[in-house]
Image (cartoon, rainbow, N blue to C red):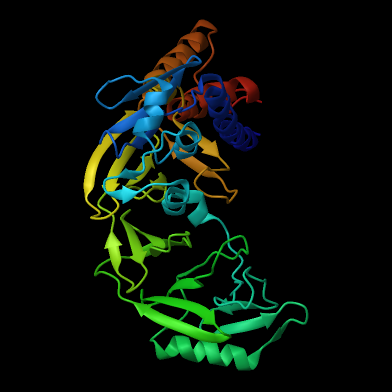
Length: 405
């Protein structure tokens, strides 16, 4: 009977570790509404749009405030349509001609979330014709898979196109590819103006570019800088065609693969945590706004679009949370989902030893109550309260003392 009660108590503790922190987070949650921030190519500082209690403030990083019209004028790369409508879009900026088409073609957005990298992927890929006869891309009738060998599969019949498979596999191997691959990165959608195929990292950490041109394989090897380990690649296919892809390494460094000669250039921003941090790049003709959001802060970096030099940065701290009380009440929490990946599995997160404050107080209270009731102190119950704090006390109330029938 004692063993059964101990097992029931442990089960109850884990259920409480799942439910109570979840309820706490719902009751105390404060959304991290960071202000919209964008580097001004006119004022050469960050423009900041912040809304608090339905009151919007327009200012820059130096504290200067603006009217809406003034704010539009210092951020023409963002509000170019409004400025064009009002006739206030400048004809040129920094010696570069300005109009809606030029600005829109050179504006781009890139977003990375840890869940993008950690989600499950079906290893079947769509390879488009990169030089189609018609303007729009058309979905091919086959898919390819890549392990130690590249094979094209016909989904309707589940058969392998041996001739095409051998042709593309030989082209990859001729460039030095050795499977199985670590990364196969592409953009398998027809909702884009053109196709640049796939960037592939093989088992030896070598990078290759694969695409289909007039029905034939095009493969190029890409020289990577020394001592980098790619963990994520996004093929961009933006209208301006300045670069092929963004590459993120295991130590959180950000690189761009440029068109023309496959130059791999590091973006000069501090490393971030690709397992936990979100990344957003808002680029334009003059600057790239690189935004890194962690659990505790959001930092924006302005990088020159021509010289790729860091121009400026600004950091916003996340709203303060009552973490001290949380850490005192709960020694750990149990979660089955995470914003950083899409797998459902148990995750135990320890909060540290701050819970000992409440655990000792609860244990003393338990001892005093037992003595007041003139009952003996139960070792296993006391141990659970000391080791798991609030969870152990509630489990003893729900299940009863582990040594009692």
